[in-house]
Image (cartoon, rainbow, N blue to C red):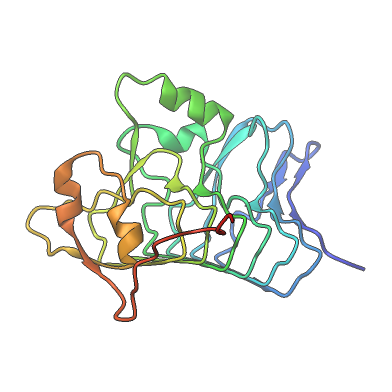
Length: 244
């Protein structure tokens, strides 16, 4: 017997949905056959609120998704209690949690309690919180860029994610952010807007070369961070092979 996913179920005769809504703590490790941790309901038009507070996944060698990507999503997910999200050594992971249209309404946050985001050694990861098809269409149709607020986010640690190009499918604000540690995320070009009154600058432990290449929506955003570069830093003059 082998486990490839934690499936959701729906009993039409009872009107009962089992989408693991009451699960508060989940830790899954060393499950080599898992291709997606949670699989969604098919053709079910509704929105579900999950009670999960802590999620930890480690060494899922074949997993491509945590919450499986579907097109279209069919329903929305909300994680108002999720506080801690940790992923490590999931080399084939592509995305973590797709955001649905319900979660991308202006001024609302899909992850309002998230405090810690830690992802390390997931070489294929492209995006942490992408928009699903309907959410992307909604965001693109707005007259102004959609911004999602992560009001409780304090710590971000991203390590050796060479293909990660962004954390979220839209702009992010993180007014409570305290520390950021980035290593080996050369495709990532943006950080959350960390502005909040007279709050101290956010410490950002990162490579100098990566910091110098970051993009900002306005010049003031960079001043809200205090870059800290490793002492052993040595500027890389050339990436790739030399042709002779």
